[in-house]
Amino acid sequence: MGFVHQFWQLTIDGLMSGSLYAVIALGYTLVYGVLQLINFAHSEVFMLGAFGGLFAARPIIHMFDHTPSGMASVGIVMVGLIAGAASGALAAFVLERVAYRPLRKRNAPRLAYLISAIGASGFAVNMAGKLWGHQNVPLPPAFTNGVVFHIFTGKVNTQTLVIIAVAAFMLIVLDTLVARTRLGQSIRAVAQDADTAIMMGVNVERVIVLTFVIGGALAGAGGFLQAMTFSAANNMGFLPGVKAFTAAVLGGIGNVRGAVLGGLTLGLIESYGGFIFQASYKDVIAFLVLVLILMVRPTGLLGERLGRAA
Image (spheres, one colour):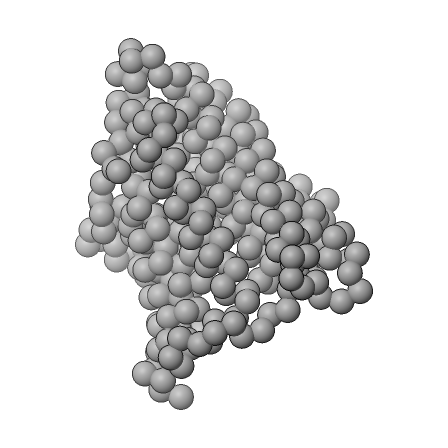
């Protein structure tokens, strides 16, 4: 079938992938906005959140003799999301305390942060492999994955609808938090000028910790959505992490709405490009987008720092 006939289905699939990229990308954006630091261990927070949500939801699913439906399915997804978010938040909190805070206290060079992140990432991947094995760990279906409705020639199934709806809800909540709450004001103040924020009475260390925790919670919830769609594995974080980083750079790293725009744009580019060329080129397309955006417009599509956004 031609591209025109498949356009709407490709768009729906791209928005689903892009929604996940956007959720993960927000963790990169928040931390960079506050610390001007790329948290390269963020993909492992995503992975740990996936396992946390999976192990919380799986026993409940097994209580049913067949695929749950109705409110039972809603409850299972909610339990998985909450457990995934809590696992991701805890992992991000530990990461900040163990891998980054000691370096920050010593005013360590930026290279030290990168080395620490690589070490933390390797530790998390191998520890997860020791605990849960190196094979894919599937999650039994939490709901019947039927077609909900059509958009022209595209089909929106239950799984796609759940992922897009949950991701959209999380993105709106975060945007509201950053733009309209006291915590959001503190985050933007620290992102704009940490020294001035201290003089204004902002607890910078608390803001930094909460920034990691919020980004980790989003990544953990996104990890459960990924596990619900495919499966969980100790090495599952690498590709989504790279693509989410690409999305953050594409939208303008340090900008919350830019991360959302970048994620959705990358998801659509991948979906269209995978059809026009081959599905196996999807990952190549993501890396190519990263290289091109760094060459042509390194500030990204919006190119506005968190401290000046919203």
